[in-house]
Image (tube, rainbow, N blue to C red; front, top):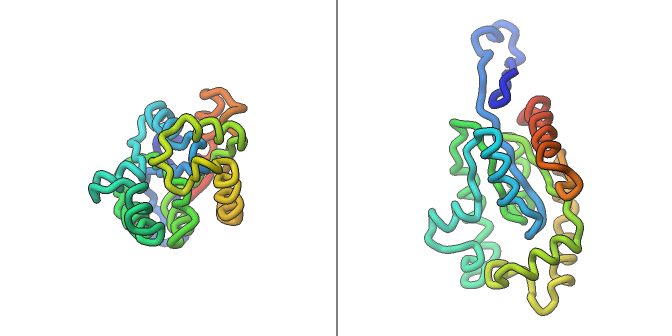
Amino acid sequence: MSTNFTTWAFKDGKNRKKLNRQVPRTLFICGLPGSGKSTLGKKIANNLNFSFIDLDHRITSETGISPAAWISEHSQEVFRTKEAEALRSISFSSNLVVSCGGGTPCFQNNLDWMLQHGVCLFLDVPEGMVLRRLEQAESAARPLIDENKMLESLRSIAESRKSCYDKIPHRIEPHRLSFAEIIAEVKRILATDQPK
């Protein structure tokens, strides 16, 4: 099997031979804010020779407004609508890694849509590691995190999204793995999991 593609057959036996085809694969990377989705997603895409999309950057490029500005100047509800539109506008014509926003799978039925169009991977990163990254980041870029109560904000977000994150079928602890081990696991997932 090719590293970049997988093949599956439609269930209709009469059309099986005609409809067998190689199709591009999409990997959606999910996790809490500060879990390393964009950084790791780009490295995985480069290693596998996949295209790469950072969903937050795509929203900014398409609307001229950053996710943080959408939330602070409008509302989180308005932003989630824009986010869902940007997600559903993605073209799946080539192999692709998509680094999602922290809340992407938890709103607008996005997780169901993502599972229908690709494979979802959750980055399970310890609270302390995420907190250190958030403390080093520009606070204005993460309007849902109160810089004066960062730990409480992080825990509140994690708790409110837990039921959603628990539905993501694949997860890794990237801090415990070498990059080679991460790539091996990603290849295994892409080779065995099919869109729902």
